[in-house]
Length: 571
Image (cartoon, rainbow, N blue to C red; front, side, top):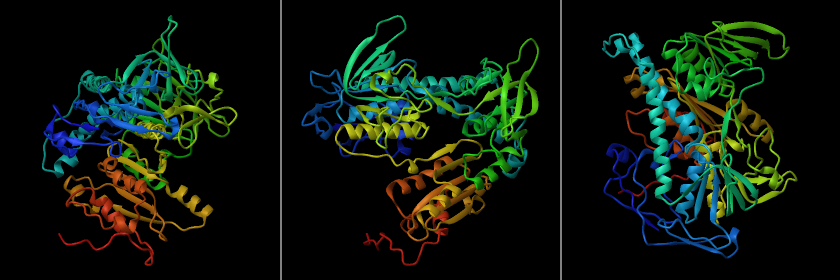
């Protein structure tokens, strides 16, 4: 299939992605177009879609007997008369969108069912609008830091903000990305079917709206990609105004003087960054004995010293918020705290607002799972390592897959996209399994936190079970020229590895642009690159990427471990 990439968007973005505006690329099924930004396809950013062409792909699938699928982008594929579609996806979030576009690249006639709005949680109520708010909080912190500005020789008058303007920035960004996602799928011929998707059988789906009987369609394969919703523990009354979830907080309808954030994971940390930059005082309520329990302990300790202690943030650990009552009749929000272990009353807080950031729950309602003998586990759809759905008897349900938050394997937008692409590879005849240990995660505070692979405690537990040793290497941002030039030397990079064979087990970064730096490590894990090989990689100077360069060079791998890097031929 010959595909042409053209752009009417910003040339600077194109160039940063190593594409020339006037060039065209010839791509084949063995080299699919795979351009994405933080889990979103490049089409989400307004780049023009693939030009139609007359060439066709002929794909044979071992999963579909000897049937051949012949398709071009112009007609979104053809399918045997017995099915309406090759692939139907329930849910048009980042995972469903990624699967749909990859399916079209593979020549599959594809439909996507969405009962709400295209883009799912990430685009409308998650990654996208939250990053808009965090962009504002980052600028505010720079302008408010007199010490930082003075060190750079800058003088700035008092910084302020317009709450509605900030809220509009987040909403406008979400609207733009949502529109571009919708247009990109339409341009490629993906049928967008509006309604709630319900599975009637292994290859049959109905989509419907309230008050209508709905429409039944058939497909060779079905992907469940329905995502998740905020999890609200029992005893907490959410009114959407003074007691809110992340869905409400992203609208930024008001900035409270004092807000309690229940949960100190990714969501809680990012909102603490936003609220304190905008002038709020924050109190964390954390059920476990330490803040940021999901992070590597050493990174958590450093992050607390930088992100929590100097700011207007206090915290209660080892406690549950057993009851939260919204503000009413002039009374404040009331929060009753109990000991997480003994359940004895501990304290009562009266504040202006409370944000519930206790994680997310899978959205698997009305899917019709009972029609295929599937029972959820804590709401999650059970799947195997290839995302194939497992029924109540432990058997695979033919032709049905589940990706993203709905299966609970890794609740990240880009993980959902990776899983969706993996499924499409499978249904078009190429076995593929996602390595979740190679998928990075990031928290977009200021500075940022990022990670991939195992934490040090997890690695030590694995080493003890399997009988090998681990080592740890570290490097500081204080030794990086670019970080010092930015006056942002606070940071640490940590590598957990096997000294006997050079295997990378985990990398954790806290510091300037950590979310961007982690991908060298995640790609190394994904490709199986060992430390003794990656040490030879060359990094531009002076750049932040040299933090990783120094990190890998600080690792000590056994002298007898061989390297696959050989002396190059002189050019």
